[in-house]
Length: 114
Length: 113
Image (cartoon, rainbow over all chains, first blue to last red; front, side, top):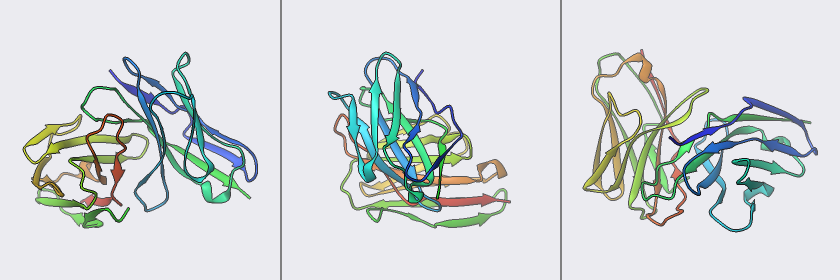
């Protein structure tokens, strides 16, 4: 069965410091991997996705994610955090069948302090 | 995202009542999805539809039903609401390409008392 784990409920980082939000997955075959962000009282916004090719994927708002097949991980990163990055972040995975179904992790709250 | 709208945005209802949540999209996508979000559990798929005549159960469909009235409209019904259906409900859409992104509506916060 497919699954996604986000091992940290909350990540705290100081503004200007680099941030990492962790995600590991379990899926048969080669997955598609996604990151979404949810700001308070808002829907989910798409940040980036991995399909194939370069293991480093760049997305919106300066975020990037690194796909590591051997470690089955897809960690979200940003070189310099902003207070406005504070939000709830979700990792999601889907297999390459035609179902289109996404499996989400439980979410990680990112708190960036001034 | 304005391309995917949900109504109502907030709803309080009583146990046993029937309630319908509606989703509309202007993205021209074939596929539509309903998820619920609970704290600490992420999003879980309730139902999904690949086109008007193709509707499928997700992982937590018990107690819910759906209707795809048109390509652009997908509604979720709770026939007899219960308190543990209190959650944030999201509609999403995508096209049918292999690695398509799902785009989410703003959500409906449902409280069942």
